[in-house]
Amino acid sequence: ADEDEFEIQEVNLVQTDADKIQWLVTVVGCSEGAICLGGGDISEAIDHIDNIKETDVEEVYAVVPGESTQSPSKKARRERPTELTVLSWNIDGLCNRSIGDRFRAVIREIKQRKPTIVMLQEVVEAHVSPIIDCLGGTYRFYLGDTQAPYFNALLVYSGDDSPVTKIGAESLHTFPSSTMYRHLISVPCTVNDDVTVHFMTSHLESLGPNREERENQLQQVLEKMAATGCCTVFGGDTNLRDKEYQTVIKKHPTGSTIKDVWEECGSDGKTRYTWDMVHNTNLRESAPGNRARLRFDRMLISNGGGPNSARVTPTSFELVGQEKLISCDMFPSDHWGILATLKCG
Image (cartoon, rainbow, N blue to C red; front, side, top):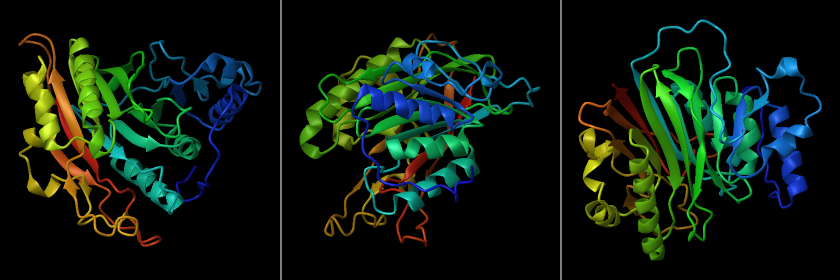
């Protein structure tokens, strides 16, 4: 499907198991990619997909959480790149203003840049079918708790030229004391048949008064990163103020091993602020006096293992989504996306 052909409309949230199953059937039935949902029993939904035949499995199929998966393509793979790119972006799905135009812009950005890994926050139900229809042929999809009003998504590029040669079993960690449905998605990948890298994304607790919960969630993220025992890349909307981040990093046992990709790439002032109310005007009507500039969106790297183990090294960092859309006089999101290039080996 072309990104200019779909429309996104406000939809009612899924409330019952029956609604959820019907929604899963619809999503799986209209896509040509894979979708892995961490928020329910997908096996029940599969039983209801009568129109999918065995011969269709390689084109339309579902992935049950906990099962290791590989790209189904049987074509001879082209030479793979030695670097990979990671995009993390809060796409502001909770804002209904011009949601179709804004989401089309997100799709175009992904299709043009073709990141190896895409980490999205504030995804809503209305996004799922269009993004799978537009990107399902080249990306594997892993979603968070789809019963929540909004959730995270992690996409892995699975084209013949992808540096990812194997995708492991997804895991979903729900932050137990969150009041905002916050959770962490983790997907282990093998890069060029050599290096194992765990990719993680989350959207940490919002708003200033929730500092304690936000810091607690960051501690849990660091623990999950350390537990992999190998290279780990985390990206997401952390909502962290600089002091909050430093407080946790200095106290946590593994804090000294964590590298901030923006800092590792030179701490360029031009790419510092990802929630920039001076230059991003999306919230100008609802918050006319807000001119805050904060680095909410971060990408962190942990190179686990011994000194001779494989490592992930960032080589570039940039912001995306900074072009205002003529059609609606808005940016794709109230957040800039962050895009990093990483060298593995």
